[in-house]
Amino acid sequence: MLFVRAQVIAFMLADMATGIEAARLLTYKSAYEIDRGRSNTMLASMAKVFAGDHCNKVCADAVQIFGGAGFNVEYPVEKLMRDAKIFQLYEGTSQIQKLIISRHMTARDDLAP
Image 1 (tube, rainbow, N blue to C red):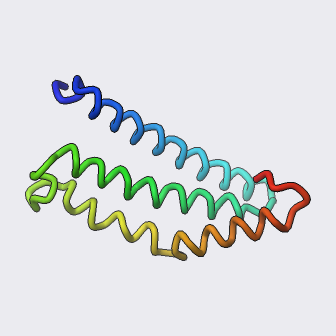
Image 2 (cartoon, helix red, strand yellow):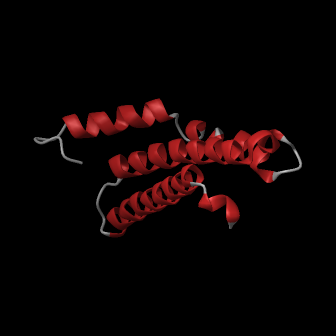
């Protein structure tokens, strides 16, 4: 892929992939807690906030990589950019999820997640 040779784009792609994997692992950890019969509320909120925010960043970066064509309806990246916002809103906004996380953290003796 010729465009990956540009270091800026290569770094953007690396950040995209890293964040996607981090979101996946947070989701898996949340599911693991449920499988063990433990509460996963805080981890589920962390996964949702991180995945939703990262999804929006990935889509914005993809539009940037495509340049002017990123806003063209002929390319799927334009639709993905519009659709990504719902992940920050559906099932509780990111701000509500952050409130849930902070309440769980401050209810404990230590602040570690």
